[in-house]
Image (tube, rainbow, N blue to C red; front, side, top):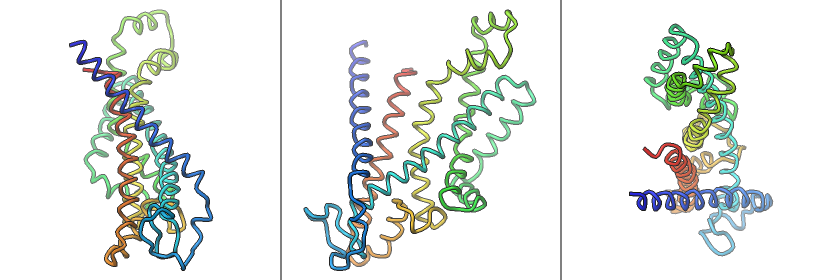
Length: 272
């Protein structure tokens, strides 16, 4: 049994290492590739993949590898901000539900059930549209639609920790609720929060791409994989398959990498 667990941990460590290297490679490449590759060159438009242009070129002669990698970097920034705000909302509401009394718990659980019960993408589009669309709209939309599951997890974890002996001792010494949350409860749930963030991050990237693809996200001037895929649809029928295949594949690899890291860390924290 111990040998099986050791092999599982080694496999997960390899998964984390490979996934992290892929993410770092994309980030480094996004800074190394020259912006001059994004300048229109009509003499090189619609070129298939080659040694000079690994992902080919688009209908304006722009290098698709550069567009894709820089677009993924921008998508990661959007996903990072949306996920971070969503995690903050989830942690705050989860802790309040656990320590704020029965009324606060009932109200927050009602909110969680209401948000989970709504059509996710439709709700995300409505919030983004109401917030002014663009990057700000996507960030707010992601933050306000991705917090319920983590909030419920945080609430359950805090309620379980409150029954631990050291929490009871701290209360008997007259420590305030804020002191207990800051020094005992929050450090105890920090690993779950980090895993929740890592698992939320790929969803945020995918939703940014899907919303932009549908026309409710970023403007066409912004570098984004969603914009690239949305534009590519108009040209696939002409046989320019590389405009969608490579950006879509790289987006899938990036999302899977973050998801793999989150799932692996979750196993290390709670193997059961």
